[in-house]
Length: 360
Image 1 (cartoon, rainbow, N blue to C red):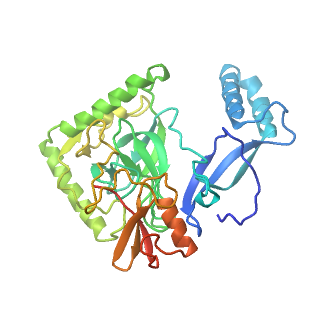
Image 2 (image 1 turned 135 degrees about the vertical axis):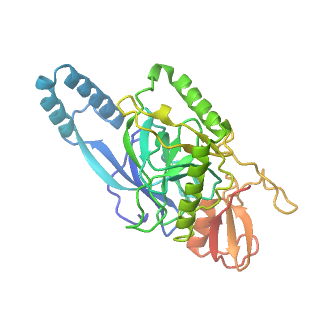
């Protein structure tokens, strides 16, 4: 986790890695726990990148489909001999203290939309952004089938950032697990397959149709059954709010959840025709999800002001000292200042804590 730990591997540019966890280390840097594949020393000399490994896997799968009895064992054995699996920790971005900035790894969208089923009894809270402090825009009851097109991690809690899933059609974000300490971090959703209706040759039309579904869900008038379900939803969220105030699904602000839509169109052809629970949305419009207007703070607008430390990123953190705070840095630089024991760059007071801010 720390940069002082032993260097074990170097992963080449363009490689693919699987992120299994994100946390912030003692220096205030975002660190990712990853898994990947590297060419083995005994592997073929012309194989150097995991991208070629992926292409090899696809070719082997095609061969297995055509003649599984003759090609499955040799191809799998050949793949195992050429590559070895590794795991460890990497930085998400360059250390600003080095004088450089920029991402080291970037999240990529799913090549094929995946289908997830809500398994939590009280359902899944849908928010407009990755962070749990972003506005709540909907709710998916237990049993709902959701189409997922992306994956990311939140910035908070810093010691165990939450895995978040992006809904198709700019429909918002949900959590994979509850925001609780193990073992009470129960699964919210589980993957059940891929969306069989997705056509790679018509990907643009697919995503446009998903956006239309989201807009339709926002403007559909609730029926009597929906009203009853919403009342059950309020009771469920109220129960959660009495357990923990920091739970992602502990919001009891359900008064604005007045729209509904049938999400059964998102089911794969292999799924049964059983009734799918109603998905509620509120305040979602095409092009507005995930975006927030930036307003001035006090007499000074913060819209175009950059971090005082790196001079490149926006001011996304508040440096708290006592009962006051200064909005002067980006989250990364603010965390580093706190980790180093530095004082506030504005007033030179000792830093008590760092919070991430959002302009509402």
